[in-house]
Image (cartoon, rainbow, N blue to C red; front, top):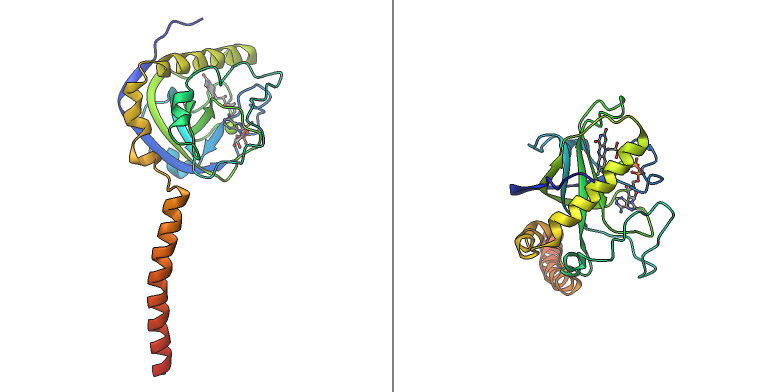
Length: 217
Ligand code: ADP
Ligand code: RBF
Ligand code: MG
């Protein structure tokens, strides 16, 4: 087990993107699916390459059919054991502790541009390709490495997950300002209804105008 060297950034870095298809290297089979972000969003990030911890939220999350966590054979973590305080703050769009890989994946030689991949510490019933994901990068864990074997990479990822949990476990207060940041704001359904009503009202004025305009023709 590596020593805890995780280090909080002075300011979180926020990035939002659509979730795209990655390299299909089977990270899911390694027990670590990663949501890959679009190149345009990634290239704006002004950070050194490395493994980071933070938070992520899906703006349009898949509906969970079951409330229990599925434990597949490769699921090496129990994501429900703690840290639920964070996802509880935004019930319809939970904010999950997340481990982030940002860089060139030196273990593989096929990466030509910097990628950002986020592994959310939650078991989802379904994929969420094309969803909008919001990621807050909060702290640094280590630099990217080339390993002697895939097993070594997997073991190191397990340790990154442990470090992420360790960094976010306490004191929770210091992270509340991040998860309460307007970046993670999502309109709730009551607000949406109100906004729709306001829009419809405005729209009826518009259509009146159009109507008058049409009459003039
Ligand atoms: P790809 O190479 O296409 O990124 P992955 O094996 O990395 O394939 O799987 C990524 C996909 O898995 C994500 O885009 C998302 O839809 C899904 N997924 C399911 N659970 C998670 C999770 N906990 N964290 C990140 N992505 C997840
Ligand atoms: N790739 C590397 O080449 N070197 C690494 O040190 C490395 N560390 C990672 C740590 C975490 C927590 C995650 C989620 C990914 C990491 N990756 C690393 C990227 C990994 O190679 C990639 O997710 C898969 O190859 C799927 O694209
Ligand atoms: Mg991926």
